[in-house]
Image (cartoon, rainbow, N blue to C red; front, side):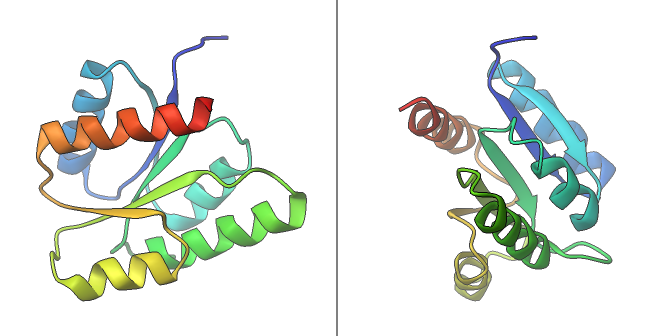
Length: 130
């Protein structure tokens, strides 16, 4: 078992998975990938992630519904809420508002600035340890 902080990346577009996982590894984080909301909600039950990077627009269960399912499971089991950061290529303020209303903690537009991405993850990792 490793002490490397672990992130769950929820993304259904292979090119975005490649970019995000490359950055996550460069920044020193371990990463699991879920390709849809159902898979994300199931993997989140493990409680092993300090953050979930959640694509908002996915086929099937989207990121908003997956976040609601994760929050419901956390409430039902008493598990500490994981930090969920919504990500979308649609940069409008309505996407950010919808993400926060669904229970996400923050929002990053795609494509993301690598420095902002690294700073956000470092901030969340510190909060998780505290």
